[in-house]
Image 1: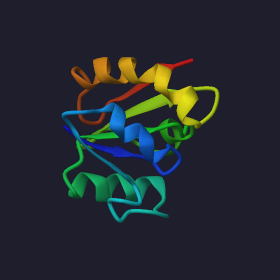
Image 2: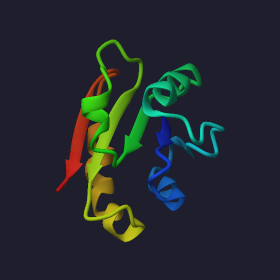
Image 3: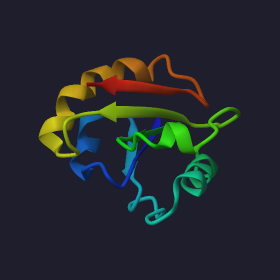
Image 4: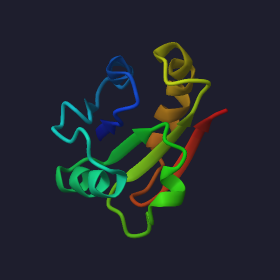
Amino acid sequence: MKILLDECIPRKLKNSFPGHECQTVPEAGLAGRKNGLLLSLAEGAGFDLFITIDTGLQYQQNLAGRGIAILLVRARSNRLEDLLPCVEACRSLMNSIQPGELKRVGE
């Protein structure tokens, strides 16, 4: 699975998804893009999954018909220490999430 981590997520979190191609938004050359354009560009680049902590995304974007799935991680902060406890749940949902679907993980 090809995974894109949002800019608001620490880059070291990508080490938590071995066996998957995982990049951060800046590494993919997509830094500074707004959510709608970012999702379209990520789809075009072949990403299957977008992981974010941006709770507004679900209200700002129409996800129907999207070719990318979204995991919305709910944690106390975007610090690595607060996100790591959510990794196992993310891995579990990765097996069942479908393109155009948003699932929530965490608090």
